[in-house]
View 1 (cartoon, helix red, strand yellow):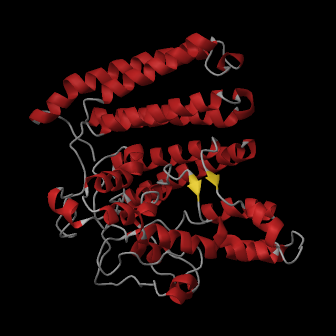
View 2: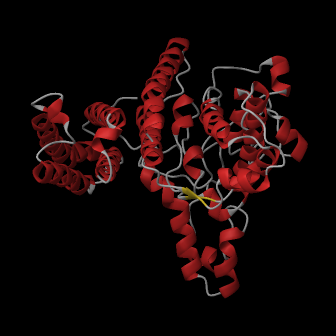
View 3: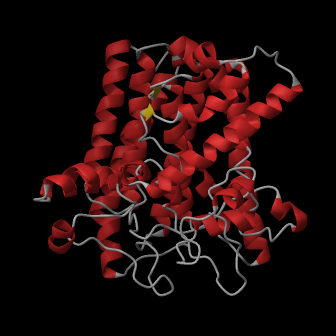
Amino acid sequence: MELYGRILLIAMPIFLIAVLLEKWYGWYKGKDTYRNMDMISSLSSGITNVVKDVLGLSVSIISYEWMVEHFALFKIESTVLTVIIAFVALDFSGYWVHRIAHEINFFWNKHAIHHSSEDFNLACALRQSISSFVNLFTFFLLPAAIAGVPANVIAIVAPIHLFAQFWYHTQHIGKLGWLEHIIVTPSHHRVHHAINPEYLDKNHSQIFIIWDKLFGTFQEELPHVPPVYGITRPAATWNPIKINFQHLWLLIQDAWRTKNWWDKCRIWFMPTGWRPADVAARYPVRKIENIYTYEKYNPQSSAALQVWAWVQFAAVTIFVFYMFGNLATIGMPMLFYYGGFIFLSIYAYTELMDKNPYAFAWEALKTAFGVAIILTTGDWFDLSQFVWWGKYAVVAYLFSSLAITAWFVTIDFKNSATGNVLTAS
């Protein structure tokens, strides 16, 4: 946990700087691929994912270490060749896990968040799941286990493999010549994120594009078919926590509502998007009919609200950096309380971004939770050992945030509704 936290303290600023540079480059070139609220939503989603991972809120039914112990035919040392084998094995496994997430109803829930942005940029790469609590697919690494690749090598290579998938989430890089035949490029991945009928559910590979070509899921980006991004049932919210569970909630509702017991059982394992006929008729859900004419989710927001959303994101980022930098000091179970505060904070300000009047209730809950932590422990997770005024600064932030949220809900939202509002892009 502490090692992962230290890695994230380095990786997070790098990702954030890359996102800001892409934003600047797009503005400079006259092709800005970012919208403020979507950008904040994506970055906030990334925070929820890394906090969940640091807290260890997921388990594997079968661990890779167990498979090596029971199935390894060879015992090999940690060499450069071993690392290469591990990387290829992870990529092969990643292809199938990714493809299954696209093709089976239940598993789509954990992946829908990644596709939920209606923009395509480096920030949307950070939209990662918090809804997967059990890893069912470690067995796809069985070839590596049989070959005897040590578990510690997989543990080191896995984050490298994950981070290597960041760069190709961009519209600013065209086709890359001969590399198009070997690795996943931005062109390939634009196809993957598109909802055009020609592109849907294609290019599942993560590093080497060869898997799609071998297993029949490859599609080249076509010059006459510009990609349209998002999901066919739009999320229609900036709240990444809601997005993580939207599809699962629909499945639960459909399974409950259908009269057919066979449908109640099979809905979880049917192709993504399948619904029982009786439920689909009685409870239709919005689905994009014409991808070229639908309007992206973009509720009118005042310039003040957009600035405040950035302030809230910055505040949460500071809280997260303190958490990751002091994992050992904070310790369990207090880390879970800290993680709960982060999740409440993100839920509250993204509800405000959605202009949901209940955002004030969530902000009040966050404030009460934060104050309760300080009152019961006498400090903000030992912050006073670094700065004596730390806990007072946290209290000041909590109450000022609550007051400002109240202003937005009672005054700014009404001004927006009457059209008397300054807007920002």
